[in-house]
Image 1 (cartoon, rainbow, N blue to C red):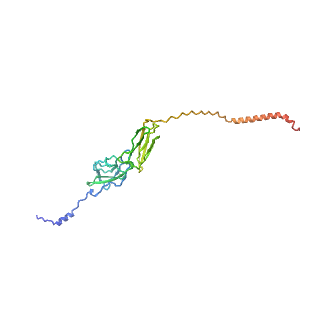
Image 2 (cartoon, rainbow, N blue to C red):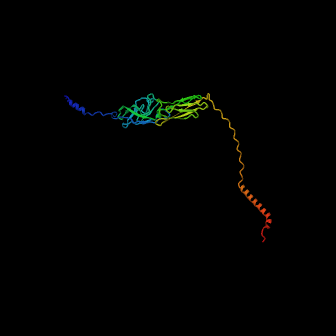
Length: 293
């Protein structure tokens, strides 16, 4: 059978008219987490913030994702969910002071990472991600004093705080110190250092409570103290004993009610009786001076 060659133009036209392969979902969508900076509150008992959750945005229903397998437990931001398997859960993120990296800083902390996204059509791809977190100043700073030191009477000591975490303590915090009754002490409002002198005339020790208020109003609280050894203490002389006060005499019995009025009546009747008796005696004498009727 004789074959006829097709013109080149016809072959090219046929190629142009062939249906193009459809793009995969991995090419059509741009998965991302909310890039708006978020504030996460600190947890006073440890070096973490609360965990905030992000939904994966910009993907069709049925999309799943997972992390790349990186261990983030010692990063400045810990990532939760999707560590090993594809999930359709939110991504959990929290700041972490217990890190081998550059520690979290006041202000916005930018966290860059990758996630692998798998779409309903079976296509998948790695996508770069970024979220931003801020927290309270009290998350970055935890002033901690030595629990207690020992000193002799007359000795002056300084109790200086240090940040429990990596950053230097700020110089614009306010330090409110209470305690130390009977001691001479002061606090440096720039550093939080407490300078105290052990009294020479007392065996008393001192305890201090320190509340640190940072520029944003968040607070930390700690305690410290000085134990007085009492070595060489000179107690003040005991006061002279005072004589006992004279006893107050007991009051006499109160007069009976109505006795005063009875006494007055008896006196009046007595006077009248005397006058009547005098008149009776004088009456015969008075009659001779009276006119006869």
